[in-house]
View: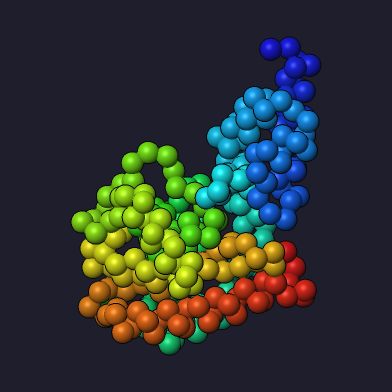
Length: 251
């Protein structure tokens, strides 16, 4: 490969990346082909390279959006602000539920938890901050999948417990319910005896950029408590979303 060809390829890839980053919504492949004027084969090859490097990712409809690398960079430069903004919300949820509360973001085909308020009980307290968990068997991951903030990795879905959903069609029906209800629940799917409820956090453009969760053991998170916690979570997630949408919030 000549230096000139290599430079041209970099320029073309950078152009596609910029078009996706500067768009206020995910960009379809056909739209990127039309906007760039490149052949479909070239566009496909460059987008695939950007996707492999984590600079781009596809949503549930196959459209391109900024990838996990850019999301991590944004978090390092702006997530401190998100964490600080969410702290009162996390603490209120912790006070009201007594359970472990987490703030998470999608990261490289998984869920990364970036802030936590510990529950007041000994049973069920785990430090999840910095841990990455699968999308398909966690309440947080289901939120990201349902709202197009993340996409399932290719291949077989790993079975963590006897209740883990490994059928993509069954999972898609579950995600329909998440969108209808406004929250997700994972019962014994990540770990036996662990129940979690999660709700989406939206940015100014309406995209889901984070999620809040409350988790605890099944002996405490009964069906009645799940409904109660879901109501609290949705309300607090909407509060945090409103703060992110506020003109006074610096992105």
